[in-house]
Image 1: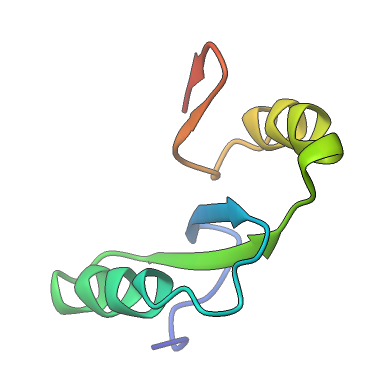
Image 2: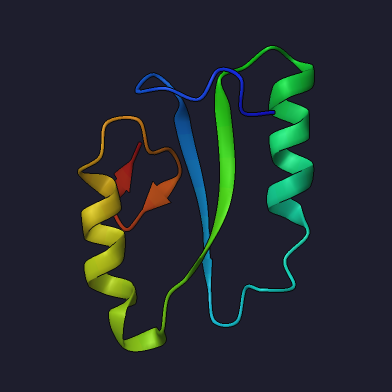
Length: 73
């Protein structure tokens, strides 16, 4: 699953509080791998008060994908 992990890997974060029980990151990463995509989905614990700055910061990362506020990456 991590053989191609590099600076070219696209990151798909799933934000939440709590996120420790999220099963979708593993499933999505397996789906990326099965299609030959260099991508990974990771759960990130983000408390409600930090959501806005975290979303803004993620929107600034070129290989980070998703919808962050008004920014579609």
